[in-house]
Length: 171
Image (cartoon, rainbow, N blue to C red; front, top):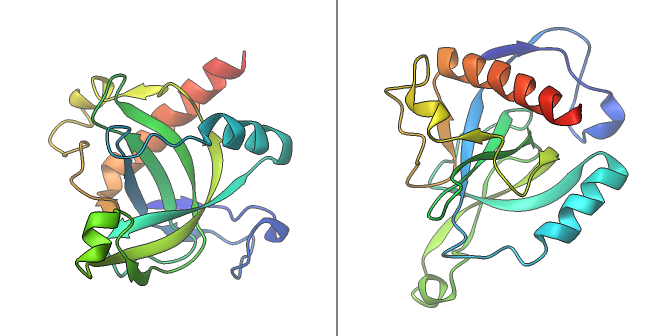
């Protein structure tokens, strides 16, 4: 869990304030083997212009993710694997048909929510190899499904590492 200061209220359709709030952190998976995200380049340009990108994402079986939670996207399946995006959960999960057509045809459902991304990279700034070392070791970063909660101390360490890597890329 992290303590943070809410960003400008105009960016969020959820209540916000300038008082510290307790924020849970969640991982959301992207596997290019299953979906190649054909709009990734366009979405990165859109984020660069606006400063954020609103996008729908699956939350797996997780149903208790609250708006305002911190979100990190992890690229899995193909190299380079690692954390490649960050943002905020904008809506609670709602039940929808599965995003994969074959599973949807069987009537399978999953959670779906909206994310507001504040960073989105083609290449992950934080690689899974980075997360295999302390203080990150011992947590399964190659999540099996989106909506996996990151334990508090690891979430705080990830936030610090992410900030350092983003700052280094801005130079």
